Amino acid sequence: MTIAAPRYKSKTLATWIALLGGSVGLHRFYLHGFRDRWGWLFVWPSLAGLYGVQRMRHLGGDDHLAWVLIPILGVMLSIAMLTAIVYGLTPDEKWNASFNPNGPQHQMNWATVIGVAAALIVGGGVLMATLAFSAQRYFEYQAEMKPPGERVRSPVPQGDAGRTGHEGGYVVALGAARRPARSLRAKRPTRSSRTGRPRRQTRGS
Image (cartoon, rainbow, N blue to C red):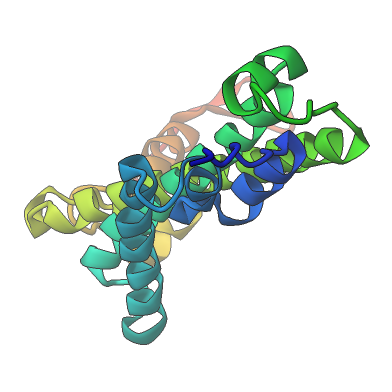
């Protein structure tokens, strides 16, 4: 009875499988077979994230469950891109010792380098988008949970204060600010055009 030799595992192929289908564990199934438990752990979170995307498409952007599920998909995609980078940067000697101990030896090529570069670009974009989406939805949720009395009202611009008047303690009428200037202007002494001396103010003037 002969024992079948282990199949050849290509580092380049594993890198691209992780890049294209790593979010559902295809890279684990390629290297370790369909009995790999870690591979199946990739499937369910990614499916949950896809379900969140479908909910947002059908129910709109106010669905709170979609807010929770979509970042899970982003995390799984980021993990897959990181795995592709790790596979591509693994030295050939270490890769062959782990996956090709008795078979053909793998040698790194340009396809592996391109796969690593693509995983780096895609992974960075997905991670940034996931963080931005999560932060935006978090602040929107916090704003919705605040009671109406605690919401901050924006003050009315100063140019509109004279037209709108007093409103909720935020606006001071400009007319009140102009009154002191008028009273000071009325108390200034006037000079006589003939003598040059200050002219006395009378009650009738």
